[in-house]
Image (cartoon, rainbow, N blue to C red):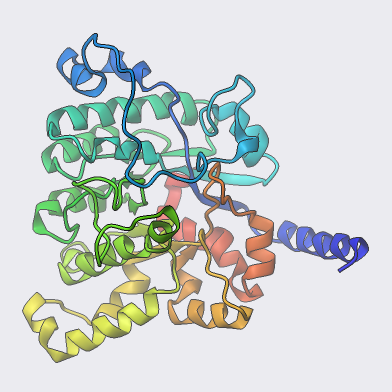
Length: 377
């Protein structure tokens, strides 16, 4: 393809993007460069648990499977030298404004820091301070940033208290649960879902880096992977477990208005897994689990996915068929994963990867139906 052809194709893609409704990005990652700034909003006891006593740390073990690079875009390093995602003003200039993003859902994977903690109370206190910080520094700077309430998966009582504290705050749009070693369809999680449904807040799940790295994190079938590419390719498994557990656990029968957003777990596995679940339901698991409907019937009403990472089979039509099978016209929302190394450009995803019939739904409509007025649009 010669340069003239490339420029012509890019121009056509940009023109098509301009015809789409206001873009909603359902996965932007803020980072607190120095978490010690949270200390003033924490008790002395919780701060000691989070930051240690006055003993210098000279070294630490890396994660069991370190990322081959930083995992972040090299061009997203802030003007002051901070890590990508740590400067909300720079993120506006580099990503939000150029891409004409009308609302960006902030998903702080840093909340996963509490997954290996044994101190549940300190974990909840840390996350409360973290939530306050993001509201002040990001949502307080620009209303296009929409914050989530990060809660601990191990402290349901503390989680509900944090939801009640922030549910009515302007700029809050969802609840983020860092996925730990607990099945999310278990009844111990139901008080959280009751509060989420009551306040109209979708539940958001997203990998945190703890998967297959920490003892208290989700495991991957077949044993712990040895390399990052192996682990990265298998990250759909924790998403599948969440999906299966919440449906067969009866969460959506008990809370029919609840929305679950599976962010960055992939999408093309949904239909084949549902076929297996429907078959199990028909063979008796429906009676054993007490479900009122077959698993497929919960998809459009209760579950949402995001585009990044979007599988790219050899032929584009293969992807389009899988999107049709998972009812993407109702269940799929755009996400970029900014500022991670594999950030997806919205123009490319919406105008080159997706069929025209899905573009407006994925870019805007499905997110509005999921998050409602909480997007501030």
